[in-house]
Image (cartoon, rainbow, N blue to C red; front, side, top):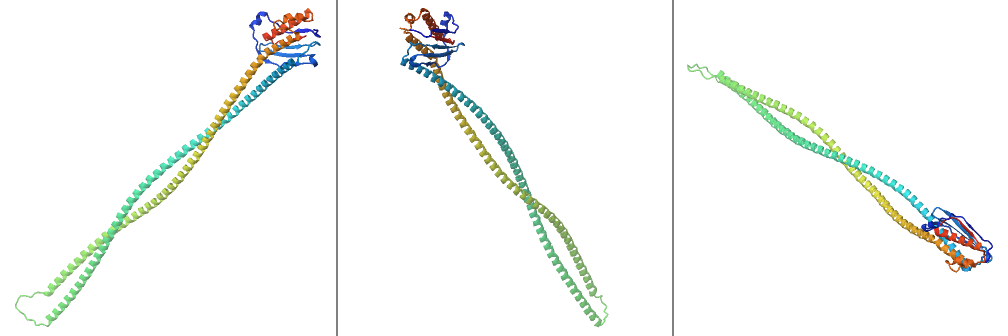
Length: 439
């Protein structure tokens, strides 16, 4: 077989044979190989590049050209299929990494935004709750103060009611006393009228007695003046005139004395009654003034009680309204808290779902990486089989013996053998150095 171009170019730092057995291949990322073939299989170019995690960079480029080299259609389609699969795997890995980073960014932004908003909402709710609690405490204090004032007003009203009842009883007693005094005055007036009638009757009787006495005296004088004076030696007769005069004087003295006594007694009783009436009238005026004052105080207290009762009703209504409003606000806040808790549970469920999805994607990525990691060995076997088919090697282990069957010179066969050994050794140890073999 004639080769139009026979050249092997190796760029690597080959390690010793003892270090080859102790090293293990570790591949991080593999670029997709590609096969370019000319018409009829001539001018075929196979290129691949690898990079491992050992810190060494490298690539391999193999170019085979010749008029005697012919590739089968199945081999070419197999290589193209492998290239397409590797490219699709790498593209899928890149798309998954890109979508993973995008999802992580969205999760981070969502966490930052929702955590900040939830914190702000809770702080505002706590502040509102504290304000409502302070207002409720103030309203309770005002309510307690108003209840205390109402109790004090009730006690004062009870005291004033007791005082009013006592004063009313005192007034009734005074009025009964006044009524008794009026009855006494009426009795005294009747007694006075009776005494005056008695005085008039006694005076008339006295006048009648005087008239009778004068008539008797005149009749006796006439009788004495018209009678004969007979001097008898006898005891002197009784002087009826003197006796009558004495009787008259005695009656007059008795009548005058009775009149004076009655007059003095009547005047004394009148003075006493006048004094009692004056005192009673003064007491009555004082009681009337006190009753008027107490009535005014009672009316003012009753008005104040009515105003306090109306204020109590108003405050009770305002307290009930405030409690209803605060209860409604607390219900709204509780509803908001419940909705936020539901949103938080939903977010946690979404986070768990995203974490599960992320874990599944990470598992897929790991399996793809493992599949990609095993891909160089498959590629190496396919390349070796391809070289064996090109060079007509009978077996992979007996390829060194069939090189002598080539029509090339011994130096060319040695160069091909050295290049293949170098190529296989680099793939076995996972060296990422650049290898270029041109046949």
